[in-house]
Image (cartoon, rainbow, N blue to C red; front, top):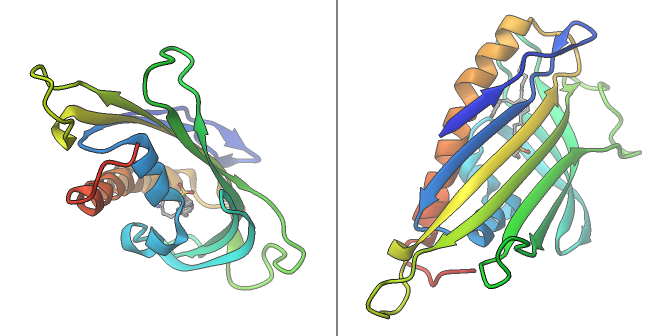
Length: 200
Ligand SMILES: CCCCCc1ccc(-c2ccc(S(=O)(=O)CCO)cc2)cc1/C=C\c1ccccn1
């Protein structure tokens, strides 16, 4: 896994853009996005999650979430309200190749859940998960197995922590949590799919 960060501050708060690139053997981009988008799986892999509610089902590929994350001392507890959209993208570089898949999470507002009214500080985020499947067909024309596929995952995020938190604390959280989060999530997808038919 390669991780890239740029140190940026808005109103004195660290909002460092992050890009992580991780290639995982044995899974497809559709499978990665399916488990990242699906609310039914989130408590299995998102261990900093304290509470998750689907506020709105806009369509089968677009949901509105309200999430409360566990407090990370010494900062106040955070929550986040965002729309989440999953879609397949045509492979512009290889029309015969597997499609790309993406999930975008973007902070939004909801009249019934105004920010910063309870114990939580509302954070604001933009997240893009872009997945490119690679197929290396077996030489002898044998049926395709999970040994012949891999997925290049690009995860980009910008998180505004909402209320003030020491930049040193935020950067320590992100530096510690993001690699864990992405490795835990991708290991979860590998485990969930290993005995299932390949979902392209
Ligand atoms: C002072 C601490 C402030 C940070 C708290 C925090 C903010 C945001 C988020 C977060 C991270 C990933 C997403 S997502 O990619 O959309 C997936 C759906 O859950 C949404 C939210 C988490 C965490 C808290 C911990 C933390 C920080 C990085 C990575 C992982 N955990």
